[in-house]
Length: 320
Image (cartoon, rainbow, N blue to C red; front, side, top):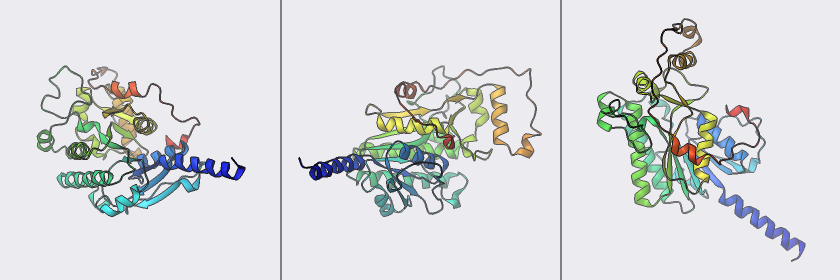
C-alpha cells in the first residue's frame, strides 16, 4: 500500500474509533455533569455537552484535551428537537435531571416535570440509531422509602423501589420525583428496546451541598434506619463510566461509598451542610452518644462490577 493510502486508511480507522466513542452528557451544567464531561474527555471520548438554557458548562481550565472533541449544545428536555440535535452521532448518553430555575424546590409539580423530561429523553434515544447505551442517573431515595422500611431484617438493595403512596403521604417529593422518573425511563427503555442502566446515587458530596438539598428530607429516619448514604463526586463519576463501558452491566446499581450511621459522622456532615455562622455554634459532639446504627443497605452489585475498573491514570484534583 502506498504511504498516502496507508495514511488515509489510518486516518479512517482513527475516525471510526473516534466516532464510536462520541457520547452525550445531559445536563452538563451541574457539578456532576461537568465532572463527567471532564473525565470522559480525559479518557479520550468525544463529548456532546448538553446544557439547559438556565445553565452553563463549568470551566475546563487545567484539563489537557483536544478542543475538537467537545461540542456544547443547548438542550431543553421539553424540546424534543433540541434533544435529538444533542444526541446526533452519539453512541451513548449519560443523563441526569436538573430542575429548571423556576422550580428550585421539589414538590408534586417537580415530579411531573421530571417524569416528562425522562420520557422525552428516552423517546429521543429510541429514535437515534447510533445510541447503544443509556446511563440514567437516579437516586437511593427511589429505593428506600416504604411502609416496611424499618420492620424488615433484609438489606435494601437495587431490587427495592420506594412506594409512591408512602412518598406522597409524607411529602417526600424528591424521592417521589426520582422514583416516578426512573420507572418511566425503565418502562420506555423496555418498550423501545433501549439498553439502559441506572445509577441510584446517595447524597452527592458536591462543592455546593447545603442543608437545603432536597435529598435530605427524611434524613433523621434514613439515619436511624441505617440507609443514610453519601457518595463522593469522583466515585460517582467513575461508577457511571464503569457501567457504561462494561458490557456485562445491567439493571440498577446503588452507588455510595460512605454510610452515615453514628453520631460522629452525623456531626461531621452537619458541619459541611451548615453555613459557617451556624456551624460554629452547632451542638458539640456528645461523648455519651456512641450508638452505631446497623447498615441496612447494600451496594455489592456495583462494587463487584468495579473491581477491575481502571479510573484516572493521572490525578485530576479539580474533580474532587
